[in-house]
Image 1 (cartoon, one colour):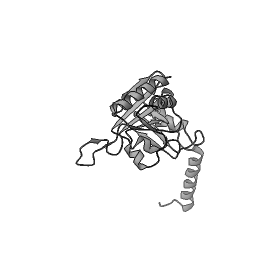
Image 2: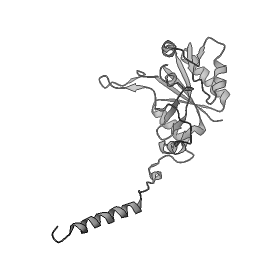
Image 3: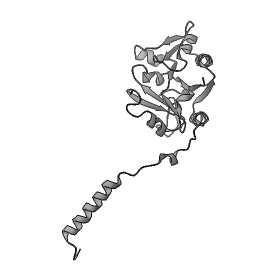
Length: 218
């Protein structure tokens, strides 16, 4: 530019950079993007999970949850049932309800033959997302991910207090250092589906064709 010296241009650039440092990063208000109100988590999760193809069941306590799970196992005609070895809501009551009959209850699958011949997989969840009706499972030594993937029927146990509004709520409460980390997290939104072949939607090809969620209120 005629009449403008190099020093003048560089001075303006330095001033602009200095102002940028002083201003700092813009703060983003995520609350305006949230659509799930506090106190509405159970109703919203139930509606969205049902729309995604999950079957939702309500239990007042661990005993009722165990009876519901036993009925689901019976309806599936199951002979071999996998159950997550780590603790989760109503686990002890469920294991007791399924022990002593014709059901083979396996908590530590020894090989692929056991995994892929199971009829039902029972797990807890790490959290549930009300906005999308998704289950979040945290895989690790006490929560093998194949228990929720290989059987044709997956039954997940969920306490009301594990439901959060959205992924932002989950991320803020599970930031590094706040919770022990697992190997990785898995998001499940409905039964397994694919439309890879001629765009025909098929359920249960890459995972369970049925996903049942038992919400335990107590």
